[in-house]
Image 1 (tube, rainbow, N blue to C red):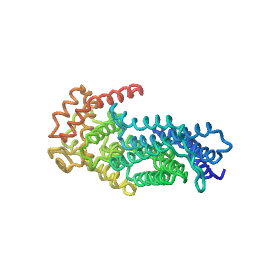
Image 2 (cartoon, rainbow, N blue to C red; image 1 turned 120 degrees about the vertical axis):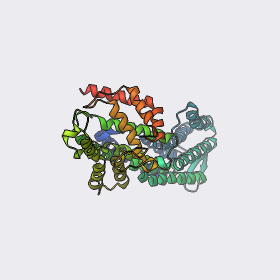
Image 3 (cartoon, rainbow, N blue to C red; image 1 turned 90 degrees about the vertical axis):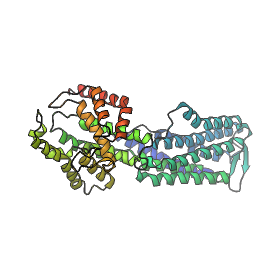
Image 4 (cartoon, helix red, strand yellow; image 1 turned 90 degrees about the horizontal axis):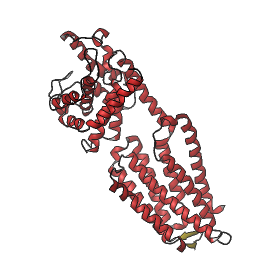
Length: 438
């Protein structure tokens, strides 16, 4: 077993990760999003296992049948290529870069398919070299495997640098680290094939991905934080019998707008993954200031008087103050700042005639401009204590007429362009409301 000690050590690490992952998945799995990590972990274990097997058999050529050696080598080479390919797909996934077009998907898959065929067709020419410390295998299949791994590692690093803004700030350093380790270890393996250290690369990046992004306990903690925010917002919303589901709907509309802006390349310096995540989490807090509005005004079935409306308008300013005080020691300054801006400025208007500060145009924070469109659309498309819900066509017409007056014209245009997505979300929430007897 002296020739495969490294692989055994790596295998133990991966099996331990699998054990912890499965144990925590049973606790929190219902809340996990589907990613490629399950496949990566399983493939990594198989690859390291095959690496160890080939490291052993290539040093026992006198007792291991040649056919078995070739079968194990072809399985190992293919497994390495599959792992590197899935890692590349994972990078596309976490940076929202996965191509939507059929042509793009084919171009991504093509090098892997070509490599796969070359490895299989040339496995018969595999050569076994006698090294100083250990034997190793070379040949066309091995060289092709090296080339494909290099191509996809370079592509993965390229995706990271090109789309780094689509990765949360606290994850960037660790992702870069395990990509760098993968590249360095793979390079050493290619230049000095006798080292047989490819298992280190596989183990390090799977461990990095798990600790950085895929630990179910950390995902659950993030979910609980989001639910706490939603629950807090719901407590306020429930004071108004006629706005049930308002925070959920507006949060979805905000998400749709922000993602579309990002996809089209607008505000590329601002719309990072962190920004969009914080915006979605901050949106439910936009009406937190209503906690200071008396029930008699908040639930009045008729039109508000000027005095009553003046009190109602204070909810924006009060909301900002509440966020500033209540979230003072939150620890996430970016989120606290965005929650403050969404709460205070979501009633500001593009033409400067909004409240509480009369901001106009670009002086209004982007998050508040997005929130404004989502808030108004939901307000007119749902039933209120003083009126019925407006027809959906009328609701979009209000956004269109408000473009350049109440709303940022670009955001209004984006919202109208994604009408099909907005209507789908609106129908989904309507059905959900009916199912719950709303």
